[in-house]
Amino acid sequence: MVDFEHREGRSSYVLPVLVSACALPISMLFWIVNVTYSTLSPESSNFTEGYPVISPWRWLAAIVIPVLLLVWGLRKGYVAISGAISGSLLGFILTLTNFAHLMALLTFFVTGSKATKFRSAQKKKIEVNFKEGGQRGWVQVLCNGGMAAQLGILYLLDVGCGERPVDFDKYYRSSWLSIGILGAFACCCGDTWASELGMVIGTGDNFLITTRKRVPRGTNGGVSWVGFLCSFLGGLVVGLVYYITVLNTVDTAMLQLAAPQWPIVIIGGFSGLFGSILDSIFGATLQYSGVNEDGLIVGRPAKGVKHICGKQILDNHCVNLLSSIVIALTFPKLANIFWP
Image (cartoon, rainbow, N blue to C red; front, side, top):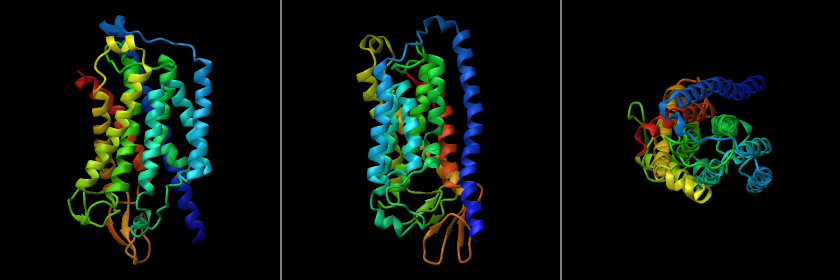
């Protein structure tokens, strides 16, 4: 029994790493396509991307802010040691790229942690493995922030550091990468709000997103109208904070010549909503859900567990990671199409 649990625990770590490793060449491919497009496009002469030198103040901020976040997360019990260290590395990368990227991370982490702790006593009666506050480890950080970290590194390699408005005509590559980072965090935040708040707000059971069959709260793939609203609001908050950061950090002259920035908020909201829907579809089909003899939701088959839905192919971490990858790679193109 001990060996079986050890293998199960080890596999839950290996699979997210493999998925992240597969996402790296995909994101690199998208980056190469975007670089080629912006170089060969007739409008490429309008691009004003550059490689500004990273100032000592930005280096200092990239060290101090993640450390403060690490200490706060540990004191509140929101992260484990491994999660704090890996989260600090993520914060370091995003602070070097763009302060708006950092604020998207902070918004997701703070609001997501608060949402996880909301009515925790009630959640313990629903999920067998619920942890108050989350206590996120490095695997959770990888699955929620791994895609954003990859895009952040590409941002540094491609356009350097610094704040830029979202404008696909003048700043195509930085806008593409920034919307990808925004979409990844809005997706994760929206899904967290939907699952953590939607689970304990409202009355009645959820319905399975693939069949509309009524299922117990906490079931993977189980959704509710309250959950959909929470997912949209979660992404909207990330978009709103990103938008406010852009208005206060980007050079005024650049903003006056750039396209309107308010669609950032809308992109955040829909990234949260569609990210949550995608997560639910993956959860209902590729993630096992069952109810044990005590009426608690479990994520693997065992004696006395009644199957509800899904196959035991992915765990919750991989589902989150896959959803953020899809949103991060598709929403920049959608934003480019619909941006006013």
